[in-house]
Image (tube, rainbow, N blue to C red):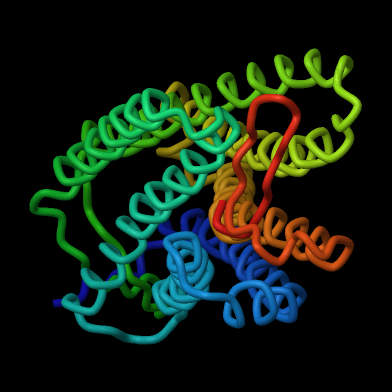
Length: 312
């Protein structure tokens, strides 16, 4: 049954939600615009290539982003919905980031595995760490959402989807990103370490330019992705250390609006580009070299040889 109130004390919250919705529209527009902008590359480099794990991950991340955007819009539109639909919309919004960040973790793991010359030891280590971080985030998300109902609120005649949580659950929810943040820091460190090591070796290698280009492609997209992820982590940690998460001020609406934008950019714009950037580089190598047609994966080899491809 919907909660109905015409109490003027809700007006600051209504303004808060309205301001946040403006940023929400901006973030959704960014996802759709990026998809439109890169669809030509996607069709050529993803749909027209043989299917692989990276192909599946790309499609899932890209189109879950569009689904997530649609669900987010439905949850914030001012029309009447049932409590059951509110619950479905809420859990979709809650679990999509957990699933997508796990997929992005697999993409990053495969990139680092390739950079470390496909070391089996490194693959096992990365798999264990990623599984630990993903399971920890999943368990925390389950604990936070046990018994959380989705309800319809009608505040001053404006219907909206809402959920009710206690203070401890809200704070724990803010901490669900900590395991993923630890994973991303580790991935950045491992990536930076191998890049520095290889660039030192390439100074002595006459064939170092091709390998250097490969590392530059990986490093550039990796660093940009991590910078935006760091912004997401900063905003989440800051809200857990302050009372802004319990504020209905205009500043709070702007704060959460910015958080929505950087979160969407990290997962659904820069995430798919982790794969597109490598596949685009591989396609360029194939065009420039007759020998490139037999390359299927990125694997940095000893002695200055490198093969590149679209599966990382």
